[in-house]
Image (cartoon, rainbow, N blue to C red; front, side, top):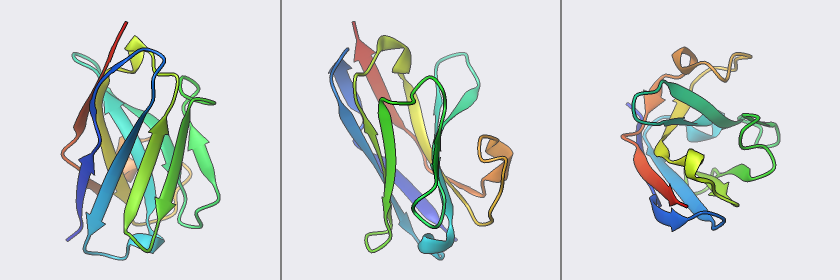
Amino acid sequence: QVQLVESGGGLVQAGNSLTLSCAASGGTFSSYELGWFRQAPGKERDFVAVIKSNGRNTYYADSVKGRFTISRDNAKNTVYLQMNSLKPEDTAVYYCAANRYYGDAYYDIREYDYWGQGTQVTVSS
């Protein structure tokens, strides 16, 4: 069983940066696609970014493209989300997720097999 634990959330002012981490235990981390999603109060859980198992292919939601960067360190079984130029609309609970299989629908929450418990990010104006 794979366990994912996010950390790094907090309260920041608009325009500042924050880096989220997600540490995994169990499973074969290097073979997983790893994604970040977020959920604001009263809204659905939305795709933010994904990094493929090769570590090179990454995809982002339009709303974060150019501001967020996803990366992974297979030696540390950790995936990161570097968030720059944060905006109040980035406020949400951020979740990391792992997909055991290669898929084209990386933006779909149903593609993912394992989820972390989430970490709160609050951006003040």
